[in-house]
Image (cartoon, rainbow, N blue to C red; front, side):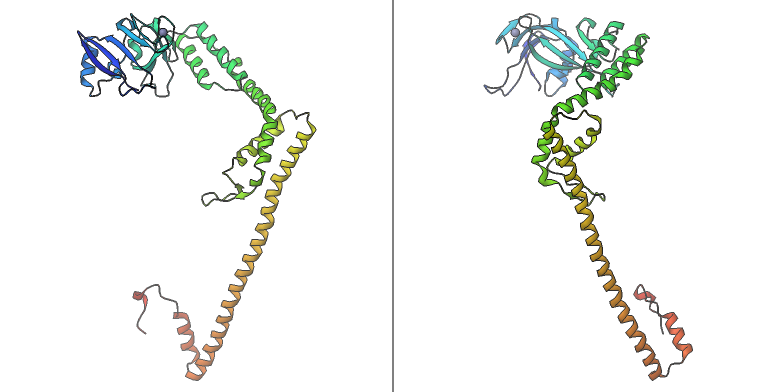
Length: 336
Ligand SMILES: [Zn+2]
């Protein structure tokens, strides 16, 4: 969402959102631009706030806070977050403008080239290029990754950030702790899986009419019919079943067994069907071969009768027999 500039004179512009209906959130920031920012704004056909790139909170003269529901004079607070992107050439900071009265984030923007952002406004710089990491910030981030692993989420981005930060300041990361993240995450995932097992089993039972194999044209393999979500649920069950603690509930255990049988039945049915189809096809092919053989045999008889009647000698007969290949095209038909 862009905010369009309305000049108020003397390098001051109000940035507001256009086409506002009574239901859309109202944005308004009045900013005193630097001469460079004014130039970039003039060069932008949309006169959008993004064209001025980063602005310091001290440049903001007033703003509208949608939580206080009023225009507030003076500078807001600001927080910048720089994420570690795969494309390291293009760094972008998320800019949050915060109301000084109620701390509400009343505006979120982007700033390219985070080098312009004063370090004290940067809350997190995952790149470590604009705010120097510290052993504490690295440890904190690692702790965050551990907490997330306990919530069954593997924070590989977080680990990358820790590695990058550690490298920046020559800090030795505890690799043992990092190695443990995956097993911790896996454990948490399996415990979650156990907790949700009754629901999963019920969902599979509800969709069990769709236990059938489908072969799509692009896929030569026999695989479960997709479309009801059953295939995905069953895969999940089969994949995790060998690794979990089984439920206490006897009924649930039996329901799982029934699902396994249904799953196998699906393949067994396919085997029977395929064997029948194979036999039918074999019969069809054999019939074809036999009918061709019949015609060939009859023609052989006809040829010998013909040769006898036409008085063709053995030598000529053999020669014509050798030459009687079927031409591919008109050009290959030779003169007799
Ligand atoms: Zn406010």
